[in-house]
Every structure is written in structure tokens, then in C-alpha cells.
Image (tube, rainbow over all chains, first blue to last red; front, top):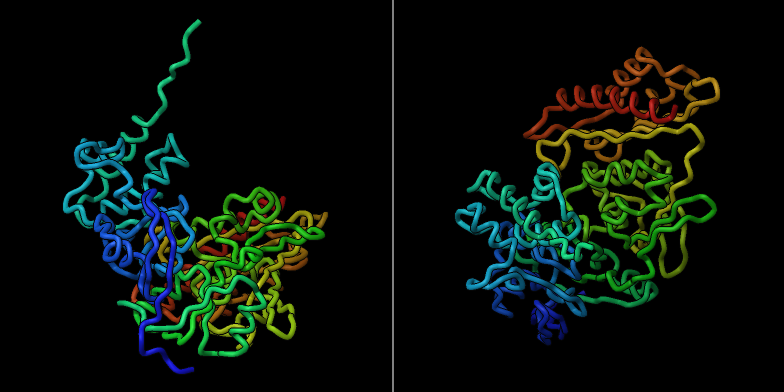
Length: 170
Length: 288
């Protein structure tokens, strides 16, 4: 087969953070680069580009995945969430506030990926043990914090996400 | 750290995918979960001219039981094996092993078929499928055939899949009564490739003697390594401490560990003996 010399592009339709996009993407473009460069979602960080560090973790149809191990063209017809879907600088969500409160980040490079991993984890495990949190974080590298404050933040967020029992007492 | 250019197809039927493979042969690669292929392409270790993305073949994503035999579609995500109630009830070796395979973010994408076809000797699923006596269905545009796991894994990243074939389904037989299984591995960090691992399957007869046994090792050679002589020596014996220790020791002689920066071959053999002893004990306990 003659190897392509001109970039081969594909038209994709994808929903990112609730917004629908229609874009042309080169077949070989990584999903992480598409989200950062084409959609401007630079909250997503790119670390190792080999699936080891977890910095680029996003939710793909609700499931945490590595954006650097997928092609942008594979996002066609799927719904994605990046860290931009959580709170805003003025109004952090519960998990982000817990990271603020517990000093769960230092340089912040890994944080976006960790927030997305924990977002999915806390949905599935609303009352996790410390051990379960540590296991859940095993796929995200952080070279600053030593993880202690990240674990503390995750546990605080879990506690604060507990639904308040509003059932009227008889 | 970016893939070289390639032509991309995402067929919506198995027939179309197989036609593309038949037409383009070795220049075409199937893209399933991509958790090994994409990093290899990012590094440009893999440089396919044509990618056939099979993720739209939803008909290959299933777990069901046919006549007591577990059938898993090649596109089934590895993570599903951990929580599927049928698998948990009848093939507990699978859910026991899944948490050792990389991380949830990887398992949400990686597929059963992709992992098996990749044939990394340090991967868990090839070892598990071999231990459980599984079979693999290979399909091409001209026909299909079944291959046993023992014959499927040929050597490092090499399987019995022909150029025009695709792995489409895996079958795992029901375990006989009084069968116990266990999986153990040692990795430097949770989710890393293990320095060594073992899957054990033991069946006991009415008198409590061993009537069938399999010990399959991970990262102990260029493919899932079957310690056949050690397993054969257990047959007909009451699997007490002495028999188990003897089997675990002799199993290490059937391995060909290649060593790495993290573990010398001697250390891998040490791990093999200790893990085989522990896993055999646990499997016998579970069989009882």
C-alpha cells in the first residue's frame, strides 16, 4: 500500500462537556491533542503519552480513560468530560474544594487527571475506605504530594457528597 | 511521541473488517482497545499503514454461557470480567485476576481479544486462558477455525492468528466439580507488569487426591509457561504440604525467565517457587 503523504482527515461529531462539536481531525491525531489544541480545553494535561502517568484522564461515556491512548477520530458519536466540566475558579465543585481544603496538590500538573479519576470513583464508591482510594489512585502519578493530602481530599469529598437525610421526621 | 500517518477505517460489520485485512495483510492492524497498540504507535515501534478500528463491531462485545461453556466476544472490555455475575459465579479465576491488570482507566478500554492477540508473555489474560483450558475462534473472510490456548501462544507477541484472520471469540469450559483456582503475582507497584505470576487450577477426586492440575506462569518465558511435569507429578497424590512443595520446586525447572532490570532470572525462579506453593495451597483449599 502506498503510504499517505497528505494527512488523512475525518469529520467527527462529539459531545464534550455537554457541548456538541463537529470537527475535522487527522486520523493520527491523539484525543488528548484534539481536546487541548482543537477545542482549547487545556485543563487536560499531557504527561507521558504512553498511558503510564494518568495526567490526561478524561471520562469517555462516563468511564475514566487515558486520552493519550485514543485517537480523536474514535470520539465520533461519544460523550466526553474533561476537568472543565467540574467547577469553575469562582465556584469549585465539592471534590475540587476538598483538594483546596486539604492541600491536595502542589504543582498541579497531575491534578486534572486525578480529579477525573476520582469523579468516576466516588460515583461508584460513595463511601470508600482509605485503601480503596489509594488503589483507585494507583493509575495516576503525582511526584509532589506523596499522595497523603490527595487521599485526605478524596475522603473529605466523599464525606461531603453524602446525601443529607431530608426525610421529614414523623 | 505521535503516531506516523496511516489510513484509518472503522468498519461497521465484521465482514468488512475481514475483507480489509484480507486485502492489506500485514500492512493492516486491527485497533481494538489500543492500550498497547497506541503507545507502540506513539513511540513509532508500531507503524501500520492501515488501521482497521473494530470498536464499532458491537456484536463482538458480549459475555454469555453456551451449554455450560463461557463465551466472551473479542471486543468485550477487560473491566467487565471483574463484575459480571455469571463470570464471578462460575469462573472466579477471571475476576480474581482482573484487578492485577494495569489500572481501571486502561481496563475500561482494553479488550479481551486485543490482550490475547497481543500475546505479551507478561500479560495476565493469556496465562488465565491457558490455565482454564480455553479455546479461541479465529475468523477470516473465507472461514473460521478454533485453536486451543496451548497452541495459540507461539512466542513473544506471536500467535497462531494468520495474516487474514481476526480473533473473534474466546470459549472457556466449565470447571469439573471440586476444582479450585488461584492467581498470584508480584509487581513492584500495583498495576505494573509483574516480575512473575502464576495461575493454578486443581481438581480433586472423591478421595481428595489430585485428578487434574495446571500451573501456568506469567513473565517466565516467551509465552504463558506451562509447568506440565510439575502438574503431572501431582496427579493421584493427596495434595499436602510435601507434594505441593515438590511441585512448586520442580515447576521452576520448566521455566525460561528472561530477567529484567527489576528481577534476575534467579529471583524470578525464587518468586515462581514461592508463588506456586502459595497458589497451589489456596487452590486446594478452595477445591475442598
